[in-house]
Image 1 (cartoon, rainbow, N blue to C red):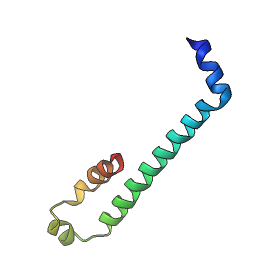
Image 2 (image 1 turned 90 degrees about the horizontal axis):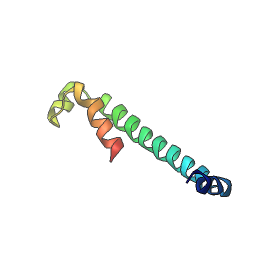
Image 3 (image 1 turned 60 degrees about the vertical axis):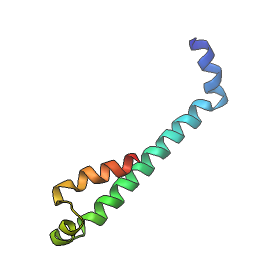
Image 4 (image 1 turned 90 degrees about the vertical axis):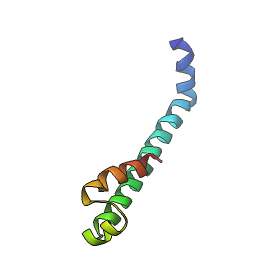
Length: 67
């Protein structure tokens, strides 16, 4: 079974998968940072108006990054 994987790596499929995985993780991190930054700039009153606490920001940003 391992020998079947080696030709795939030589053809570059392993590299494409690796780069696609890195790209997905980078995009998720960017979404997380964008949401976290935007929510962090809101005042406590503005956050309360939309129904969240400042302590919820990381959880919300993390959930957005996964979607």
